[in-house]
Image (cartoon, rainbow over all chains, first blue to last red; front, side, top):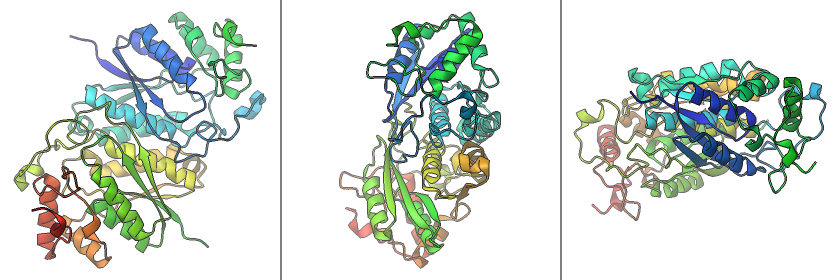
Length: 232
Length: 232
């Protein structure tokens, strides 16, 4: 019997890359799904492609979607990405880098891909701790999406292909994710976590995502192998 | 106080156009949302634009999305649209024109648009009777989407902007939809329901959607004003 297929949402960051490694470790045949939308950091896609290639996924699909029409967030509009925020301010409220309904949109495409592939399993690297301000990174949201998904599709309704959303990182700290990735030999040097990289794809070191990543490596007691490539 | 805003999913067909008329009748300020994806009938978009203009909506947004990567349905791939099927065969099972997770994807974008606009209300012209084979046209699906949506967004989580998915047509027959649209002075002549129109946007008259539309007008005891424009 061939390996079961899984759709893995892949941004090219540390979390989604570790999630992909977990799916592969669990013996799934991995179909990676990334999105091209008007965003500041298209360098993310280059990272996603490096990761997909490194892990030798069955297929890597990059879907074009148009989030511009909605605006309203630093990841899709011209609002400045906040820099050098203290850690205690990141956890409060919903961050400015929140993209409206982003995970809902991404999971909807993953659901369509899974149905076409005949896959029951979708992996997403959401994390409820470090991104506590994002409503669509919480377990309640994931459970509700899964319930909806099983009413939305042929397979769910007919009972032949029940959708399961896997969130292996959801309750881990960034340091725990890094330790887990380290055990799974994730090549962190090819991942990119920054909200605002420079033109050559180097991390800024100052946005929330860079700060959380740096703190995570520090707490994990490991060096960040991506850093020697940065300009600073 | 200004009118509340509503996002209305608009394909340019009879159902979504009637739904838009209902939203306007209920005194919402209408933001129409259509999708451009690789499909056989881009003539649909021309119909959507005519409809948006006719009703003088506040804004009509056409979002580009890439459903090609998934394939698997006559609306997005090269499988032939079934023609001249008997009515009793349409209701059975899930039709070949089913697009995987389509309404999930469409509603996800509508949710993002609603959040950006500060709108609580989303209208979708799904119908559980004539399209009984589509899992994502049923009330159970809509309720599950609404529950998920209110866990996915800032406003839902903070309780400041609860999402309501309106499905005014969900339990109506096609004839009832046509009678309702007639009362609301819906210009049916500018709508397009066909799965397989010709190059100039004329309906084929033979696909499931054309057959259901013709039967609906017949049962409503009204002529279809779109027909004189057709070649047959």
